[in-house]
Image: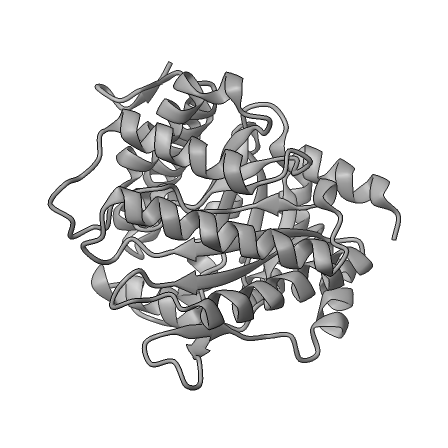
Length: 341
């Protein structure tokens, strides 16, 4: 393994004031979002929606990398241009979700293990051959009813470590995504405690499996109170709790942190990233970026609604949300008007 190219790709993903756009929803998840908006659920409509995204003018000004789903990696525009080629032409690095989803963890009711290691080496070679330069694996943890257990954390961290090592073996930068879900009534202090525990375990496994820290990206949750908690933390508490958690658990050698949106509204996801960059970036060793899915996509999807006549309007909404998060990376997002300054 040559560490130079991996570090270069990671640096490109975190460069300047850009971030990542995740359009790697499984077919089932994408279909559910279509259904909620009355859009016909079909492969062709999924292709049309993703064509809208990858052909959005000026997307590369705010987005350094796009994470695709397996189906999307092989798709093309109506006139035959491959999505991966269009992204490359826009200066956007191509990523790919490589886990096969979370399934029940045997012996631990209510907990899950993310699967997909079987045959992963061969799949990674294939993805790299089709133009992918980085990959993503998501591990999911609940914060309810005494979860996550130590076994759940350990098992998922081991899988993340194995995935990351296999990625680097074939020259792909692994995006490590350990997500503590927002669902529940836990307070921000409990989220901080669990998030730190999860991250410490993940980095222990990455070290044990000889993963090059300079050639990876961390995609964590922000430290937030549960969505049902009556005590929703202020922006300053979120900034302080998240920064403290990361400083305690994440090695300085990691080239960047790209937060997931995790069910936050588009405006809140931008405002919280902005606050972290405006108030704490100078005391942190890593750039703080974004790797958002719904927080960038959802307004555009609602405007498009499956209608060709709404194509341009939806693209405007997509690039606007990307620009909002670009401004948030600089600490210049204007929440009162939701316009990047």
